[in-house]
Image (tube, rainbow, N blue to C red; front, top):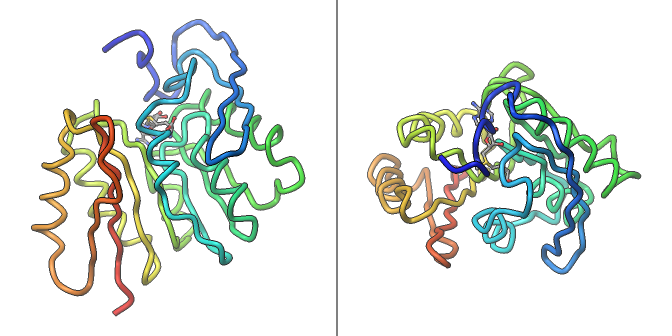
Length: 214
Ligand SMILES: C[S@@+](CC[C@H](N)C(=O)[O-])C[C@H]1O[C@@H](n2cnc3c(N)ncnc32)[C@H](O)[C@@H]1O
């Protein structure tokens, strides 16, 4: 694992804390982000995240959306800015990432704070505990933890999606993008589900998995 990604999936990263401020233009809007050592891709937005953000479907109507494994929160921030009627949840296991996401909401969307909920926890556990149902879940998953963990998560995702809800995620081709697509296509067949590849670019695939309404 290179230095950039060391420790980021733990509760309390043990790398010395240094806070950074970075700016990123995403979907033609400039965001300022506080990031920190021990948080994923803290020096510059990850290319996979950037490609997901460019291609993700952002509902215009009031929706309940989740940035799962939020890191310093770039995905959720764009959702919050572009879907002003929606309720946005952020979840990460890493407390430093949670701190950054909270700061970034204050910096980028200071008048909208009531619409954002930032939760520390293991994947969907905080959502299940509160019995929340979601219209959209967005993720750049921690594939370094292994495909098995992500496949288990895909099974769980369906239980927290509303009818017509979707899960959009980005995977590097080298980290098993076609394996994951085939897993979903083979295991979730029929008219209850739909699966689409929204984009293949620079070695990243952006996928959309929908739980159809009937
Ligand atoms: C590839 S990074 C993406 C971070 C951020 N969404 C971005 O795009 O910059 C994956 C994130 O998942 C988080 N993560 C890893 N295991 C997790 C778990 N069990 N529950 C919640 N988040 C987790 C990591 O801490 C990390 O922030």
